[in-house]
Image (spheres, rainbow, N blue to C red):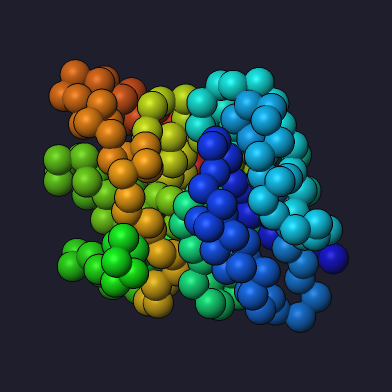
Amino acid sequence: MPLLSIITPSYRPVREQLLEAYASVRSQQLPQGWEVEWVIQEDGDTGAVRDILPGDPLVKFATGRRGGVALTRNMALARADGDVVKNLDQDDILTPGVLARDIDVLTSDPLVQWTTSPVLDLLPDGTTVAFDSDPAPGRMEPGFVLEHWRTHGYRLPVHPTSICIRRQLAVALGGWMGVPGSDDTGLLVPASVVSYGYFHGEAGLLYRKWPGQETAASAHYAPMERELRMRLIEERAETVRKFWPHVIGA
């Protein structure tokens, strides 16, 4: 039976936020014949997630040594059994129907190797804010994401945290990239140069904005560090494009 694996790294989870994420996973309606697993990997070994979430066969939780978010995502990837993997951070919320939309595209169009969705910022007062620069819905050509990112001050046309990707491609690219705070960009950008993607027209994620998130820290925007990680991501993408034998599916 086809399986989609949701990948979530966890570190010092906030109870209310994790329970909201769980509710959003549990309420997803999948296409007939599909199953889902939620693979949560703790960055450490406190067992905090087990103390928060109810016992549920849907949830597959494990602990490990501290290593940062990219390593933790990749350890979850190693434990996942699905041929398709979906990213979800512990403080974010999936919108209704997003998994069905991801599955529908990836099963109906073998050329497409990954999908992303519009993301709504979820503010502390419960209101949401949409981005005003989303691309048109539909298939995305190889190279489009990289060129936009490179020519717009390293700002992506789509939100990398909403990615759903075929497992084989994620593994071939080394999973989430070991750079601070941009590990999802480090996966999406190389994937986008060797394969077709797809952008949904409906919002797929509520992206929580709050002081405790990693991207809210001032260190995330330190100029030297940001320049280094963007440079390395760009080099990775160009190197992958150079040595990859062909665009996947073409």
